[in-house]
Image (cartoon, rainbow, N blue to C red; front, side, top):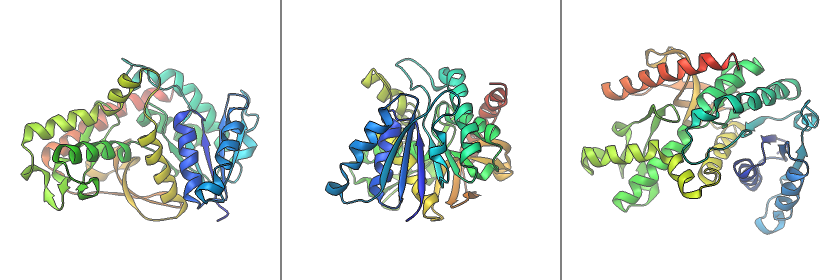
Length: 316
């Protein structure tokens, strides 16, 4: 124990992430911040009152922050900071529609992390996540391994769920993987998908796999369209919390994340969804595995699409 994790942004995503992190009972403190006065304190009080029922000791502290960084001193000494701040999507919006408005928010958050928690590993989940991860690294000036984004864990979980439902098998018997960007250039990797060890391609026809791939790519939009207000948060918070846990426990777990790629797969100088080994310093290393020619081409295409947009965020 003795570890501290901060979640910036107390919307549904942030508050559910804070709750999951507290219930792991591996942190001494979870700090939840938001710009809305009183909201994080109220949520923290509520979560703390569940401790004796759920049997965890982690204390949740809620802090409202001001426009000039007031309140951010509460994050001091954080081992991990999860950035969920920003506006969610509305029906019909793409993640890119959030670029400018969320860039301002994420830049301000990143500057305060730099000031108060310079040793923290930063996990970015604000959309559009590939661009916001690049922006957070630029604004903090942290080593690139110390800042990474959440997308692949969530997209892979969605893909896994769809495969399990299609074949009517337990989710634990499905191994799936998605790489690339969180959005249109997402690269699900059917060659690495198995069900009870059997290749997915032996169990489903190519067109059915493609259908599941498309549904995965649009997984967030499907939830947004049904909810009509706000976006997904149960699966996203599970993904973000699990990544923070891997960092806090220095676990060495290999998961798909938005990481800085420098030569792997013949791609350099961009934040991109790849598999990486997580530990106390953030990304220990990017893990390169075999891809088919089509999958590799998709990953390179995703890298170029993301690179163009990441160049823009430097100005935002």
